[in-house]
Amino acid sequence: MTRTASQNPDVVPIVLCVDEGYLAPAAVLIRSICDHSDPARRYEVIVFHPEGIDFDADLFLADTSAWPNVNVRLRSIDTQKVKGLFVRAHLTEASYLRLLLPDLLPQHHTALYLDADIICCADLAHLLDLDLGGHACACVVDSKIAEIGAERVVFDGNIITIDFYLRQVLRVPSERYVNSGVLLMNLEGLRGRGFTSSAIKHARQHEYIFLDQCIINRLLSDDMMHIGQEWNFLVPMSSSNTPKISSPRLAHFVGGNKPWEDSRRMMADRWWLYAVDSEFFSKYPKMPKKSPSGYRVARMVNRAKRALDYLRLGLIFLAPFGQKQRERRKQLAKYSSVLDHGC
Image (cartoon, rainbow, N blue to C red; front, top):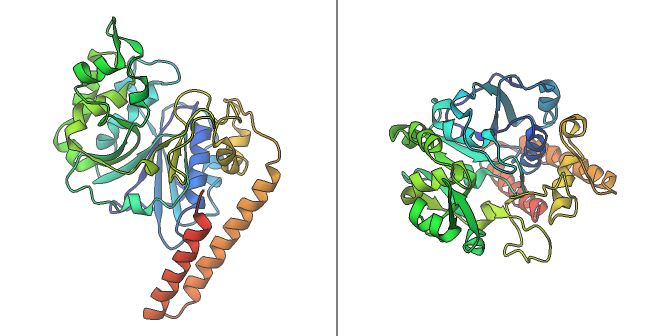
């Protein structure tokens, strides 16, 4: 299902893969993407979900109807390939769906995959336009993995440390191990190397600690482009852990205690700025919602900001054609970057 019929293979799609537990957070993420989108640019968002999930698709799409430049598509898929794969804690079989993207999007050369427990704090255009230079993917080194190197885990029935697991099992040093919540994927290159079939084979053979993320590291570590931490800022559990990045572009709520479960989590207030404006999130019954108080004002601020976006868009089209219009667009883009600073 889609709000519009347009599908342009030259547009780099933003892709989410969710089950029923993450549909509502996905709606919040998409709202944050819309809020920071450039009105003069088109964006395509594709949400893959397992067949048979019962939810109001029309309401999901209506959440972003105020942004005509953002096209959202919902696609149900057969998840048989990931059935029965190893899962743990809050990680479910849906985590493996990103491994299928090269085959699910045969008409696209590149795609930007995002986990649903993320909010967007800046325009994604820069990341969408990034030249991969032939690399399999662009991603961010996991800033937290080195902190837990001494912790013991169970892998295929053996008790080992995380450090040993990285070095001897994945053969990836901690300084190169990436978090797979943000992946700019070279779909064409991944298809050429048979990535999906190889990844699923690994998932069937071993119980990897961090599931598909470990498989991606094992198979692609030597062919990754590492980008700045601001593109996948791993949000600490509490403000006592001072963040190293003051202005993240994508804030990722890794681990447990998601912001919709615990409003005291660091940056939860920013997440709720978008959640309170999502009708789908507020009406979706299959998840807990523990929101902080006082967010009616935040809803008003969000709506005022959207009104400013429409005013900027109108000014672009009112500008004279040719060189003067291009200059006007540059001025408005500069003004937009000031408005968007700091999420």
